[in-house]
Figure 1 (cartoon, helix red, strand yellow):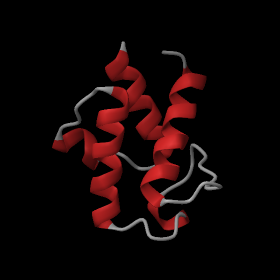
Figure 2: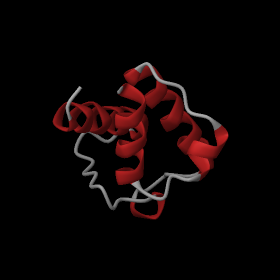
Figure 3: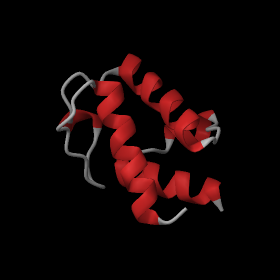
Length: 80
């Protein structure tokens, strides 16, 4: 899967989880930038991303996610 396809699916997943069809997500986006992105929605987001991309994240990987760009990099690495 190429980067554009990953971005498209990631944005769709974010919009579904946050129930915000117009949500704008960039590589530098963090939890502080998205209304309602708290610890519970973080877990919901990670589970939704695992399902969307058919991947699994471990605790160490999740702890290292500083922003959406890091999520993209992690998903890309898992899909290779």
